[in-house]
Image 1 (cartoon, rainbow, N blue to C red):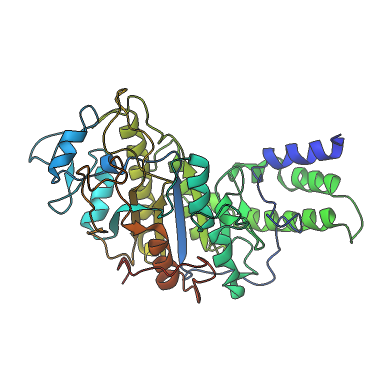
Image 2 (cartoon, helix red, strand yellow):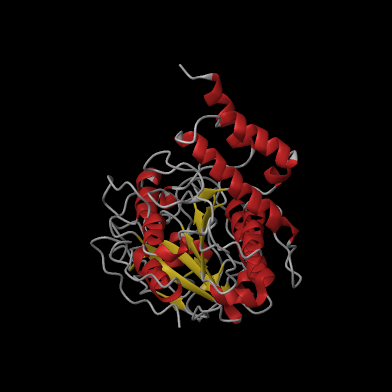
Length: 415
């Protein structure tokens, strides 16, 4: 039977936007208090945006030069670029074009800080949302028993960062699979919770929930959590407003990216940030240049562009990678949508990115070129992209422990 104290503890954690702070190995701690100054203006930062549901990469980055594309798509077709025309693909390199709602990202492409990786995915593919997301987040495709996530394993390689309380933050309601493990990581849903009644409310709540002796694990966890909250309140990241004319979308990823930008500007020692958005499971009435998928893409593209604009020169130390568990079928279905597929697209955005280029070998769309005669085939393993970003940008000393039994191949994304 659940005890009253357990209920109040859960309710408070949810109200405060701190759900998901527990670690996969047990309740050793919620936060680990920083023991040293956390000024970190030059620290490299990695931001992971997970598009849950399986994004249609053939609509996000249109292979308009492949003649098979027009045969496979009817209502979901994105027309080839045409000068002066509206609702057509935005040309990238003569072979591919961005969805017409990704005009903001097209500006980042022109500035050569945005790269595209096409036909990316897991070599151990699964069309199950649960399994495919698990493979991406654990970094061990085909292995279902992995206990920790690849981000947590990366954190273990950076012992010098362990005293940074806010080095790994998920802007989610619960800690994502990728961040679970022995290393500390936080899930902070919003900043508004930290002004709910001020110090008195937070202090009384934690002290009431975690009352006990010094040897009580829950008591120590509560005190450490309170210390971390007090630090965040003193810095007050919310005071850092968008700069350089950046305008974040009001829905979905906009507020999440704004919060991450605020944390970077506050110099809290952030190293890895994680956010997510849904709405990509487009079985029905997916739409083409307009419609449901178009609206989702507009929000993501506008959010990423605002984020890069807002940070300005700080983007030289930031790389953003988008991920999705799988793509969609090459041929649209009978309900004007697309079903679960295999390969999709990742966007890589940042100051150190060799942008203005589509990376990855294009597998083609003829029946013989498709995976199982229905899906875009994977030609770039997602671990190749992440491995290169971790090594060259995040200074990981050893990615063998991050992606066990896999040696990432060179992609060339970063200078």
